[in-house]
Image (cartoon, rainbow, N blue to C red):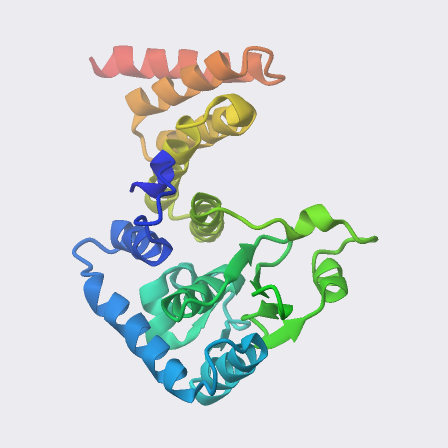
Length: 271
């Protein structure tokens, strides 16, 4: 996946990257039909616009079309269902979580040359629309527009912290989706797919190790422990050793060394 390797070129599209993420969990998934669906949704919305230079008109028409007419909405009944993170499933079921619904909104807007940006609030994900004349925030999960003050409230912030409204890169959006997907599989105790999400997450972190060294170390430790659950002991040992290499002053160093020693003993018995 080019985005996880740090390629932010305009030709590297968010919609394709997110659908490639779904394909890693659904082998054989063909993504082109879902790109075609996004094209069709954008075309239908474009037909409803009075003036492509009117930002307020776009936001109002998009809200009515996507959230009222088509019924895209947040999945309150089963928020942690992994399917909520997959764009193909969001298109099919018309339900998702804040970030997947935001990606849907952003990619439809991009096809209409509308200036939208992903905003990763601490406890939510929203979209910023800003064409220089009209600016607002959109909450696709709730199907509504928001002020900056309301965004801070969603984030649980006690004061106006403009850093919370930072625009995320495409890679940052995909990495956040991976975190959500990891948590969803973890809740279901689906260790194999939990490891799969960590494989991709570690790939994304490895491209820029220095600022994310502790996060990368933690990801290796988590993957090592899940690999032990799957009885993939050699791979687990490599991850736990990598964790100690990256986090030389780890508070749980002795505990991890005992885990590695136990793996050595187990491998010696089976060999």
